[in-house]
Length: 470
Ligand SMILES: O=C(O)CC[C@@H](O)C(=O)O
Ligand SMILES: [Zn+2]
Image 1 (tube, rainbow, N blue to C red):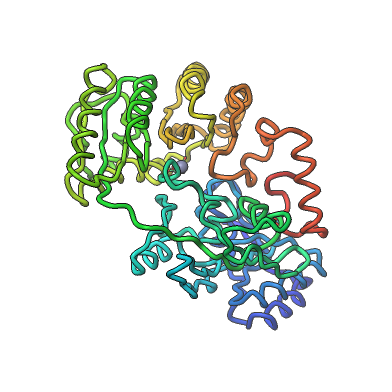
Image 2: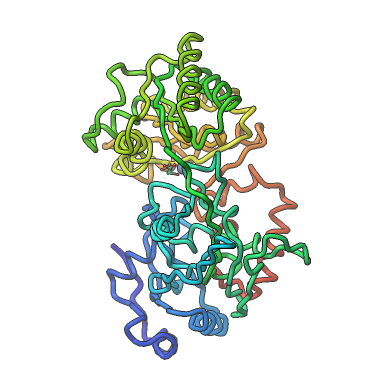
């Protein structure tokens, strides 16, 4: 463990921070610096100057103004569940944590909107929506720890994007503090607002590089009815895509995910969950839909049978209860946490759905040839064209050497991504992990414009510097 305890020269800044938020809301102890100086990527050693815990937008403004005056870099910190190093503070930065800004207020049943401070936990919002008879649809395995501010800053996706979209689609308004310390109120919950540029959108997915999100107006919707899932065993990637096209043409799916037998074996061993059915298949698809009535169920069964007849599906199971539904989902959702013990090298790549079959084939051929001795775990949101390709570190290989070898192959993977007009980061953001590869997905002109946008909102360059681009 390494940390950068505050030096005598930083003492006046710490004292000023204490004057803003109170002495108990500024921490320089090793444990807090370590826990709040990084996210779920474990590749960087955290070394922040201090961690500050504001309780209001005004306190955040005062912190930013102080940081600007002192040319002190700020790293925003939410639930720290990110996978691209967006919340890593490894260079003596000031970490601004939203742990104490976690209030939900001002629910409006007519607009179906609710105000959330940036530190509201995703699950807290989901439960709040349920209590109002409504639904917050953005969901992922880290919903118990991730915070709304972080979700918005990374435009988090998850397992229901196919039907309900990404976090961006649920942000009706934002309060942000820019790199100048100004508080902006963007869009104010309006459904229609064409009065000029929609600056709100710039802050969504900006990974804290333009300013700090302090509050959001989140849109809620009607809850889905009787969600039901199939897990279907499939021979190969072509089978998965045929299955997807057949179901998607006839039904409104709420999710379409996939994972490999290797992923399943690891989750089953780790969790003790039962396998979905006895036979082992190379891949599995998880399809979810609203079983609104018997007719929908019959339609789903008929589609399943037609896919078996086509030879696309080898075996399958349909959930008959909420408990079964949750257990089937865990087979997919527990993968990331389960494989984290192997220090995986992560890829989060995408292309448009129509190009997925060729894309998959090219990526698979490449990684099978390039990683002959590494274990490859395939899973992801295949219905969104988004694949998570995780390469597991062999126990006897040094971490740095492993990452160096994977980085070399990544360049070839990203060449394929570029050829398919895809993204090097479909949903995890760029952070520190993917910034060297940004140009595989974005043109030089686009990156130049991004830099200019940053300059406008953050002229002193203090907002999460070094993330997305240098
Ligand atoms: O760990 C990963 O590679 C993906 C994590 C997450 O986005 C998921 O879909 O489970
Ligand atoms: Zn994912």
